Image (cartoon, rainbow, N blue to C red; front, side, top):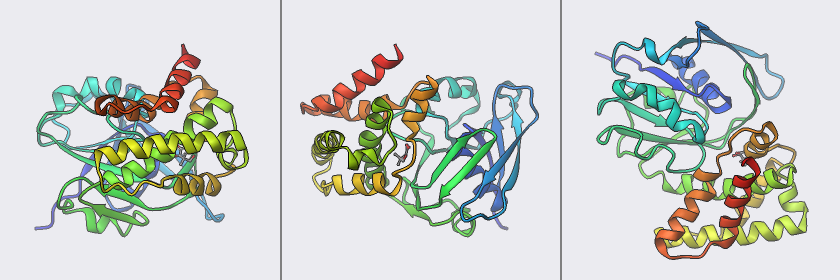
Length: 295
Ligand code: PAF
């Protein structure tokens, strides 16, 4: 008997959550948005690269207080500062049987918020999506790594036919850390200076700051795992060049006056450094600077 396809409950129907919902529905999975609203459905428009016709996506909505049974598949794609408030109303419906898929920037945002013996899979996407509900523009569809356990779920192989360049990894640390360093440099610098990503390469002062931030991050990651290759600056500059005209997600949040993901990105690095007894003054300065801009 084939396994039934999952019914996902989605927290966070922003850019990345909507992209994932589209790929999952294409593969025949059901996706319902969990949101405290009276709207019965969310109508989304996805703009595709290369002038392909727009996609209309309709996602059913369910209020968390309307749940009547444990959630078996939960996709967490809320921005990290909203993790706690989004998960709180679900607590009684999350069990050790719930499979949680975390699709967020940064690290550690769900620590202590999920059932102790539950199943957590991590996703790292290098795709680029911009815009705001209800219109999401897919700028580039790149690799997504999914994993965090030795074997993929039964539905994984079939999903790779609908989710471009989706790859399984038992150990997610390498793609997570690579993305973390990119976000720890590009996001706060572009947010604080209100510049597009490319300025990291073209502005000599920002380039110099990027070098110091990357060195600190590599030092922390190398202390956590001596096999970490380091030399992350090349990757940071390559992403800044490839996305030169883009507004980083943290710059966009700051422009809107919304909470940013600084705690889960540079804040995570500072926390690790403190536990390891390492000094990361430049990362610490950025955390404080970002926090004070919202105070
Ligand atoms: O958070 C973001 O904006 C993106 O992850 C990245 C790679 C920095 C590009 O803008």
